[in-house]
Length: 89
Image (cartoon, rainbow, N blue to C red):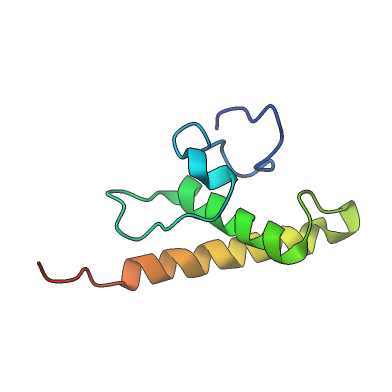
């Protein structure tokens, strides 16, 4: 994955701010995008966990719980996106 010199997205999520500049400020809507990959889903999950937990970077004592929450939310978001039916046009 590309480097993240500011450390904003953590070690497991590639830097997506260059391609999705609004991602760094808030959680973006992923539904309706032409293609949503794992980096975009994980970045949204990370932003959510950061917002809910109040941590930009958790302590070592909280890192495992933080990472598990990001993983679970990313999986849930991907299942949601995969299960949505596009509206008829």
